[in-house]
Length: 272
Image (cartoon, rainbow, N blue to C red; front, side, top):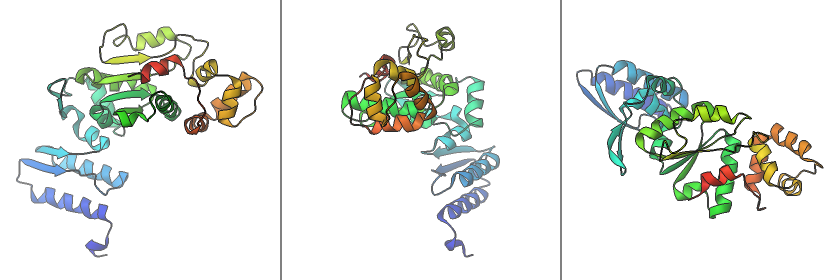
């Protein structure tokens, strides 16, 4: 097949490899957005080639991809911030550097570039927080420069390590999982005023350990049945339905025009 007939992504990948080979005597390489036009698998292959073939050369690279950022060296990122001088991520713990490089799909770039960030545990939490924000402020978070990012609770502390070093404004929305003491131990470096720019938002009532139970705590069965299109007669049945249909329930709440109440810790996270 003629080269100009193959996909644009494959053309870019081949051209990039040829350019690297042609510049074998150069000590510095300038690369602009290597992710352009590439599928995820081909982008991964290209980044691996760049990493291996350019190990002894300096690379100056621009990217809009968290994958590229994480894979090629999150510790080398240079950040110009209005809150500080130029900063790097060299002070990240080795564990966190390794974590992001082994799992490069995480949205570290979104975190770094956001004016404010709300970190949540999953897609249902993300939808509910966005709905609460829109109901409170009349617009979605991104319209105010607030990015709601779903990262999973296991990755919270990794992201917070970046946020603490770079003085990023971050709020974490998390369940208490019926163990508030464990939650406080996990986030002890960010509670009680230890970090001015980071806030952990949660409820201390262990009888309501999840987002679904919290929504049932502050809303009537009638309102939730109306929003979800259900007709359950008690909260136990409704809770069971919401747990088994987490994302679908959250999507119905997000799309509903019905005004409803949200847990106080979510209200804390979305305040101005």
